[in-house]
Image (cartoon, rainbow, N blue to C red; front, side):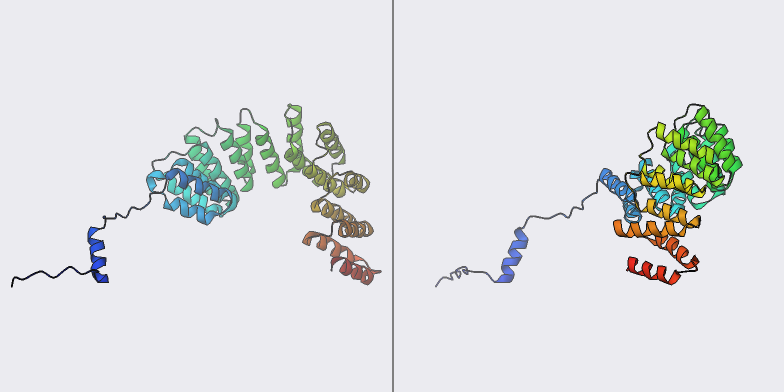
Length: 337
């Protein structure tokens, strides 16, 4: 009898089915997704602007060296200079100069800002020399203004003056940087003289410039100049600037012009906590304890908020009062708690 093959099984074992599936399956290639350099740069810049420096640095380090453009280096340096630690910005600068990239004016301005933040005069001088060698000091206001701020922050006022005097056409930022340099180093008279020179030269002021001039005038108790600044603010439509109104309160308070201080405070359209703290502190500094406590009560009833500066001023008033201090302390406790 001839041998006949057995009929094929109706179903294969599980292992056989798996093997057949593997044998006839289409080959699969593992393809790793390559990140887009533009997307990486956008992600890194977004993190740096928001102050998320750790993920910003991770995104930067993940970039291939060939994809680290000047924009990428500058964005990360600016993030460190703004949000800290500023020393990391200087470390990045040293790494960048070892690459084929050539720093531009914005890189130097960021580096100078980092030097000012850490108070590194030595590195600042090196950055100054490198920027001058590339022709940026006399031709770019960003670099020149950054040099003024850097030298002022490092207590090298003479160098700041030399840089400012070499600026052919200083802009408002240049004038303001030099004004701030004088006030930060206790040269309030020079600051006011420079401010007068700026105004006589036809340079328009902004709120920040006026606040610096007010601070210098209050340090010298120059009430007449303060009056003139106040009139200039009204004429230039700065009267509704909450920031400047708070500066005026501090100015009149330091000059013991409490009636004018109160008038500015009463006429404010919007009073924030800074405004209340300023008027309470000024009354306390001028030994007008009742005025400080009255405004503190008004603050608690109208706004129901305070901070450590408010409490410090009020506690100082209460501990200074000889008669009725216990009663005032009990009222303070009731108002706060």
